[in-house]
Image (cartoon, rainbow, N blue to C red; front, side, top):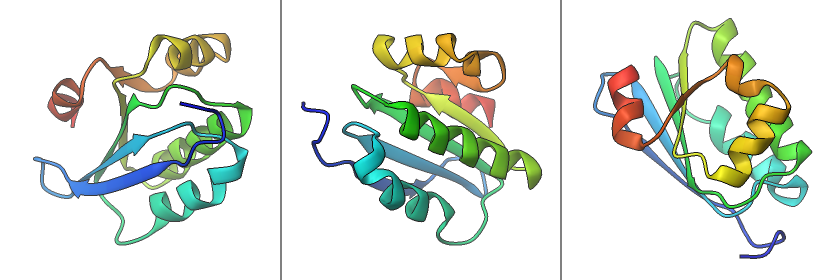
Length: 116
């Protein structure tokens, strides 16, 4: 998968009442940043959000910025936020930027749903 490949975003309700899951597939980069932001902020405000990144092979600094921005948006509104299925490559970016110390990161979607 190339860095300029499209990002697909599937939104669905989680098992917990009021929770929302975003299943992302493809790289999270500057060219698809506005699509991602629009999807994340669309619809009614959930009580909990899970970003499933298991099909995200690559994320650039703009993509990381969008994830951090949405995390802050959720924190300011009392919405629980969990990231699931982070690949080794993306996890290295989380570690390098110390994002892994402030966000809940679950190994799988199932584990993430147990956190909400």
